[in-house]
Every structure is written in structure tokens, then in C-alpha cells.
Length: 162
View 1 (cartoon, rainbow, N blue to C red):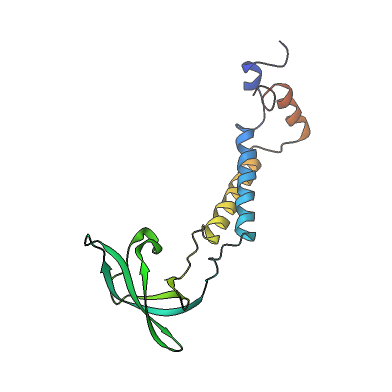
View 2 (tube, helix red, strand yellow; view 1 turned 30 degrees about the vertical axis):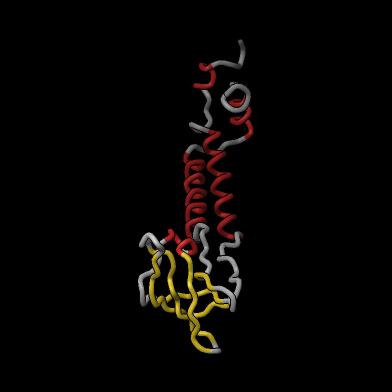
């Protein structure tokens, strides 16, 4: 069986795991591009963002906190509105006298929208760091030229049956 088998793969002169290296470069580049070009802003508010203060926390029939009564400062004067527990992150109501930004409409209130995406600095640092590590690894193993690549391909290290 010429040019196949585990013995021939062990004799290859390419880096330890070429598929891992290719995967690392592709993923690092994708993360770097996502950090550069992704729109990571929070969703647009439905109404108007105004300051508010939690006045009290209302309980349901079972005695569990169910709604926060919020005093909202709008141009026509202060308005009170209730925000359901389901609207808050983690379904946790803020304690009384907590200052918060409220997405106010004349018919309803909600907490201000928050972005749940990964922060841009994290995507950029992971993507850039991955590219630097892959570049340093490829630099350390020496130049990968066409001859070395074809030799490893023929031996079965990359591609068919590897």
C-alpha cells in the first residue's frame, strides 16, 4: 500500500496538527472580523428613555414580589407605572429607591433595553490573540511551502483518510 497508513503519517514534516492550525486561523479571523464589524449595540427603545425611581415592590397573592412601582419623571409631570418582574434581567426586582432608566410610553413602561451580546473588546482580544498565537506557531515550525504541503498530502497526513 504505497503512500498510505499510519507509519507514513508519522513521518510527515508539517506542523503537529495542520487541521488544528487551519481551524485556529479561521476561527481567530472570524472573531476578529466579528469584533470589528458586528453591530453590538442594544436594541432601540420603543418609547422614550427617562429617569425613574422604584417607589415600592408589590407582592402577588402568594406574597412573592411580582411588580415594581416606578415613578417616572416626564415633561408633563411625574407618572407612576408598574413593571412586571418578568421584564427585569434574571426576573429580580430592584429594591425600593433604586434609580434606573425606564423606556417610557404613555401606555406602558419597561426597563431600558440592554445588549446581551459579547462585548466588542472581548471579540477583538480573543481574535487578535488567536491570530498572534497561530502566527507565532507557524513561524516557529518553519516555512510551509508547496513541497512540504504536497509531501504531507501524498503521505495521507492531510486530506484523504486523515
